[in-house]
Image 1 (cartoon, rainbow, N blue to C red):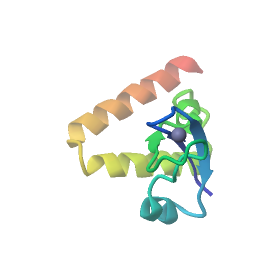
Image 2: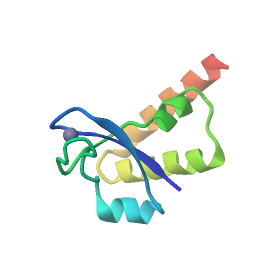
Image 3: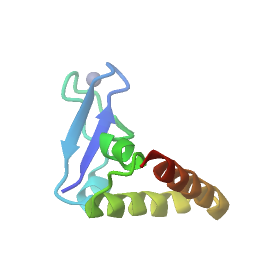
Image 4: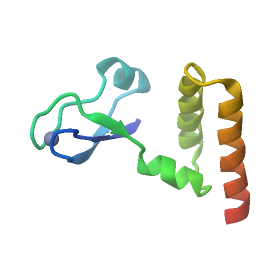
Length: 96
Ligand SMILES: [Zn+2]
C-alpha cells in the first residue's frame, strides 16, 4: 500500500495519505488539505525516498523508485535519468 506525502500550498500543512494502490493514487490525484480543506495539495518527496538515498530500500520501495524513474523518463531525457541514477549509486557506496 503506497503512502504519499503532500504539502498544502495554502497553509503549509504536511500530511501523509495512504492509497489502496498506485493506480488509485494516480487516478485520484492529490487529496485536499486536512487542516484547511484547500485542494489540491502538492506532492512532496517522501521520507521513504530520503531513506532510499541512504541505501535502506526494501523491495517495495525499490519498486516505487523504479516507477518514479519511469514516470520521469516520460518528461526527462535519458541522459539526465542516468546521471541521477549514477549519483545515487555513488552515494550508497560511500555511505555503507
Ligand atoms: Zn491547508
